[in-house]
Amino acid sequence: MNSLRKEHDVISRALCTIGLALIWTPSAAYAYLDPSAGSLLMQSLFALIGGLLAGLVGYWHQILGLVSRIKSKLDSARPTAAATSSQQIDEPPASS
Image (cartoon, rainbow, N blue to C red; front, top):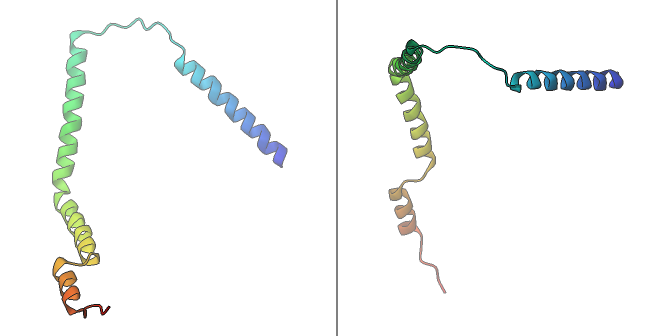
């Protein structure tokens, strides 16, 4: 069973190496990029930004609720300045 596992690892590494070599091997791309290719790229970028902003606006109240819950948990775990000063006042002075 162990030798079968080693053989599988060798085969998978070889296939990954061959695949990466094929991807990284430069080849001539005889392609023509017309002027509208730039506008297509810009439209895609604007659509991505618009979609992200629309998603953010749609979930804005949930995001704020999550942040406020985390902040309240952090504030409740941390002692306040008033509690710390009252503890210092209530403590009796140390005798020498």
